[in-house]
Image 1 (cartoon, rainbow, N blue to C red):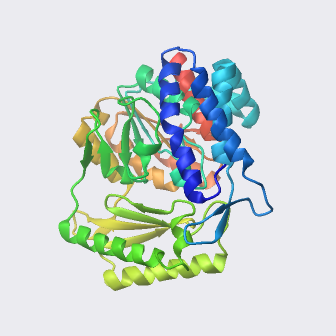
Image 2: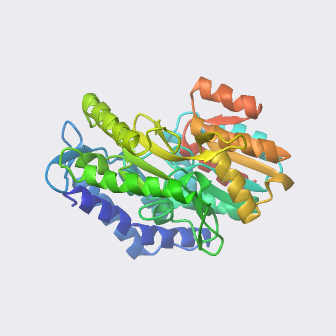
Image 3: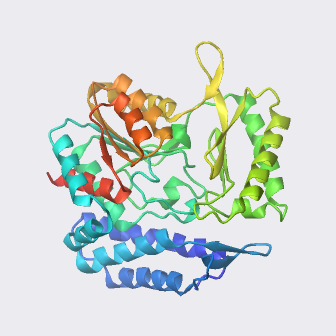
Length: 396
């Protein structure tokens, strides 16, 4: 049983090779190895053994102190993977249907809208879109059932499938947490500024050297700040500290609200002061405050010479050029779940002759924004519904 947050992360990362093996077997129609099932069951048993207290499950932090966490994502994913291994895909789909409101109706609507569509490319966000939200990015290991559904769609329905996320690519990033077989999906991190090509080689967009130097300076100062016991917790909760390419993320809160609101706000002010000292004119570094994370982003210069944030639309254009995705040559399906994914959709709509969208949201404002770009967009309520829809499309 993990007693510290570090031990918990180690336990979750130990499930990655097992889940990769099980995913490859599921796609090949092979029965799962009993030893692999037992290893997943042992991991589940250890997580469930962490005691539940009023504030959550306690795990100790490096340097002292305790954080209380919700292990719902991790436990739920292991339970579903075991259910898939022991009961099969039909039973798992019935489980997903019973656990997600409007599941069957939303899958049916999606099939009706997309079954006859010409789709050559999939561009999708990860967390909250094709992957359930997790309280801590470092433990959001992809589940076997999720990877099986996505890989099956990628192999069957499109020429190119791209996961485009704001998270880092490696060093506890997208590539470390994914269990899809190599080559099935192109993995792009840092809003598309970096990616693994079809041969597993890491590639990056160009960043102005002077701007990168300022970001490097910021990263060094952030590490110094988090070495202070007063601030160390912000590197351990939620997204933690993530060094991306052209961007850095530091958590100020987690989805469980485990940090006092005043303390979180004071930390955000500390980071703002830090950036003001490095970039007093505000022309190189921008802060995007999501309420949970502070996204510290290097700007890009537009045609008029003014600075603006790099967004997923810029990432789409870069990946399309670099990888030869051929977005302009065929239909494209874009999936997201927040306003940060709308620039990705808008960029595709400008390029592709046929753009389709599925967004995971019940927010009416976001739905209206998405419909302004793609009027016949489809909406579902949960990531599990979306990946089940993609799997259903691969079978239709």
